Structure formats: C-alpha cells, structure tokens
Image (cartoon, rainbow, N blue to C red; front, side):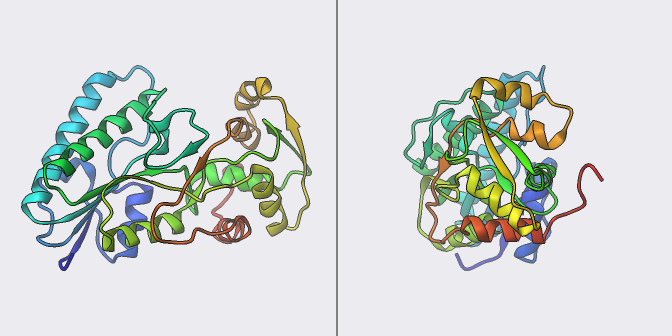
Length: 277
C-alpha cells in the first residue's frame, strides 16, 4: 500500500475511522460510482447495521452482495488493499469466535453479513488483496447501547443474566480503529476476528461502576429470565437482558486490546449525554 486511503460507509464506525485517517467517508449510497485509490487502501464499513422486521432478506442480500462484488473488482483493478468490516454474528451462538470458527448465522442480519463475508472470500480467490473482519459488538462515545451499559453500571444492584463470570463479545471503537490501521499494513487475508478476547461481564460492570464512583452489587439471574429483562421499559435493564450468552471474540490483528479497566475508563471518559437525561 503506497497510495491514499478511502473509507466507504458513513455510519458511526465509518465516520470515526475516516476521521482518524483524515478523509471524508463515502456514503454507501454513493459507492456504486466510487473508484478505489490506485495502489492505496479501501476500508469498507458500509452495509446495513440492522435488518428491520418484514425486510425481504433475499433481495437485500442480493443487492448488497452485487454492490460489494463490483467494489471489490474495482479494488483489484486498482491494486488496492481492502479491509472489510463484518460481524462476529456470522458465527451464531459460538462461545468463541476466530476467523476459523464455522459460519452458522441465526438471524437475518447475521445471514446478510455471512453472505457479504463469502463475497469477500471469493474475491480473494480471484486476486483481491483483502481481509474480512468478524467484528465484536463495538462500544464507544456516541453509541446509545454504550450509554445504556454505562448507565446500568451506576446502579447499586445489577441483575446479570447468565451470571457474572462469562465473557461477552466486546471491542472499543478505539481498538477497532487501531486494528484496522494494523490490517492496512499487514499481509493478512481471508476471515479474521476483531474483539477484546475474554471480557467477563462482571469485571466489565464493576470497572464501569468504579469509574463512576460506585461499587455495584451484581446478582446472577437465570438465563430464562433474560427475555423478560430485555422487554423492560427501563433502557439499562433491557440492555442487560442481552448479555445472557457467553461470547469471546479474539483479537487477530497485531494490536493489544484494552484491558477491562482501560476500556471502562475510555467509555466513561468519552461518555455522551445519557439516553435517559
């Protein structure tokens, strides 16, 4: 890679990554007319972040994959290094995710990301210099779920579905950006995972509480009650209901992710206005 860097995708992650590299992100809707920089690098952070109920998933997959194939073919013609940001959700309920974990999507969103991942792998076989990342759930300033997590850690008593010792899939926005920078310079190809490794939910909540001057008491709640918590009208309680299943997403880029304490300090230090304020 000797040329410029370009970012496709102007959402929360794409905008942050583009700003870090000093470029303007290209919105996904404009990607069909975009030409990657010659001998440069292309970061693809576009694609749907959610799939609303009632969406024709087959049509959506076909449209997104066709656009992605076109963009990757142009990158090959431009001798451009490509980093595609995907999702660890492609591995379904797997407790540990790496680039070698079998694909087993269980939601429409995960099926879409799995189809996009396959397009990248096929493009690599056809000569594209690319890597596709199975990214853990990302937390950082400006994300509503991160605010809910931080707010929840201020409670004196926190019910934790599934207990407090299991790991949850997690990566900070800062670590993801550093990982992408590393991947641009590396020769890694194929599918890899980007996460913080083992992130015990109890350790994370306690660290977030300490950063806010509290010492929360954590109480494990049997997993069958997680659905009830997730339906709560309280944002922090509902968010906790989604932490029931164990998930450990490994860091397979050449960076050292933040420790739980460092991640808590980063999140609380960059905390935006509470969603309940």
